[in-house]
Image 1: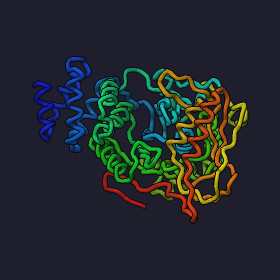
Image 2: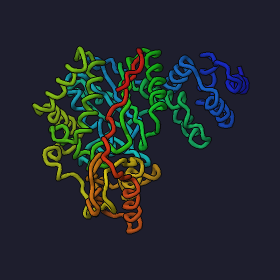
Image 3: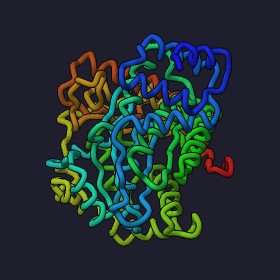
Image 4: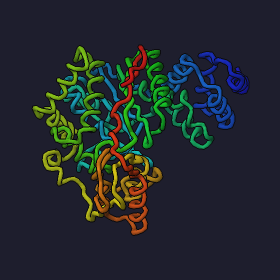
Length: 443
């Protein structure tokens, strides 16, 4: 078997065998197949695509390229939740304790933010002392005892995906649905969950900008999960404006706490209830969505979800007093209001521009080496559908050490992100569709 023959076969639209995919991924991981041949193969896939069986085989080979976590020591059906990334997306902060309070174990490995998207680990580290590092035995023990733990990826998880993604990033082959789907799902499979709920964002602040592309990606990932024996559901949710009002690490933790208290933004609460309901259904704790939603709402209402978050924070070394007194979380010294230049109805808020503005203030990383400021960010004052007059506050910048030019650029980006219309505008749907192995249900 030769790499050049596999490249040619895919270039000409052929279907690769399981053995050919295994040869390619194993050889590339070992360094026996060079970058230039793997680049040619990725470009062939970009143009010719892969069918569901090929994509499933690719996913499994990448998952097998490194450590695979066996969660069987933890009792119950372990359900993972993965978001494809967005602005103001702090759903894991809410869902991990909320779903755990309902009896579904959440053994979650999360990532850090890069660019305009925030990272769950960075947000949790806003809580003084919170540790995202934990050995496997302690991780299992905490999930077994409390029902939830959120940590960083440890060990040698999917090294093939790391190598291939870095290559795709510099060869213009990132935007390929089979390659995106296998990249996401290889990490989920290696992480060992029994079932997976995918939050696939769509819109200006999402990786997939159109609804049809988002549904196609969701279908590819659900197909992979199903083929590899994982119950998988995808929710297509809106990212044409930020989720909630706070963008920035400590600001998002505060908003997560408010949501667990039942006083959070309605859009964030609703998305969490929808995602959480799917997690409860896959975890066997509810017979239908109505029952699942009722269970979750009950855990918010009686304070048990917030109590679970407090327990989780304390177990991971965090200062649990910050959960009861969010004012103790890192904060900014300066605040600057961004005001509307004209009146009208807010028609759109370009989420990516808001995310970049928050990054300029220090809330995110331009590169992996960037140091973030946990206390800074942006709090929106108006969202899509709201009426504003000239001089009304659209958003508030939370500033510490950003330079004057960075603050000016951030303000300009926020102003550019808001688009006004003369006539009333309806707020966009929060969820557009749910994708299962049985098909797509649109709302």
